[in-house]
Amino acid sequence: MFSDVTCGDSDACYSSVTCDKLGACYPSITCSDSDACYRWVICVNSGTCYSFVICANLGACYASVICVNSGACYSSVICANLGACYASVICVNSGAFYSSVICFNSGACYASVICVNSGACYSSVICVNSGACYSSVIYANLGACYE
Image (cartoon, rainbow, N blue to C red; front, side, top):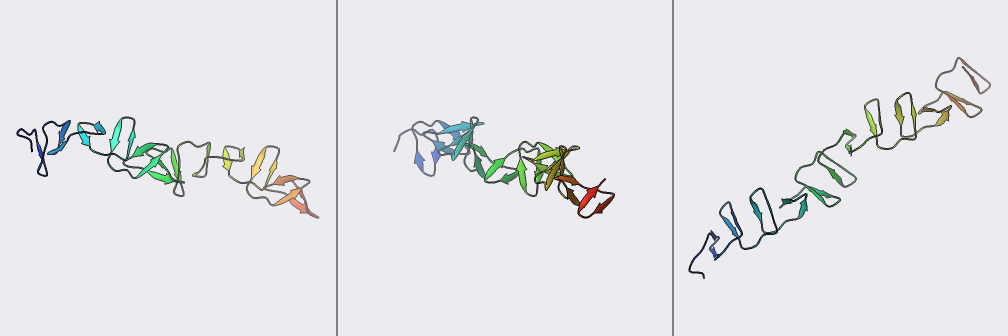
């Protein structure tokens, strides 16, 4: 027991404390964040201390996240698609976002394509003629497509 105490925390006496936060005394702290004292922390992100986090991504801590994708947490995202989060996207197709695409066609992105014709991508085709894909044809003759 000390004769002098700076503050009291759950009947514990301290002759000297590093900081005092919400009536709690800490003889030593791991880190400080906006005058808040932490006796222990889970992780540190850019000098900010978190006593609890939702998830950790590449050593960074997030107290709040927008969404989670493959165990990675994002505090900010460009877009979200079917519950998946992307920090960066290549292109957008009909409201769907793709982080990787096979090819581009008139500004549309396709994650999977059936065939490619002269640099154009088709997710669905009517018929195939000599390795060429057609999304629309005038008529088909004996399995051959004609535009």
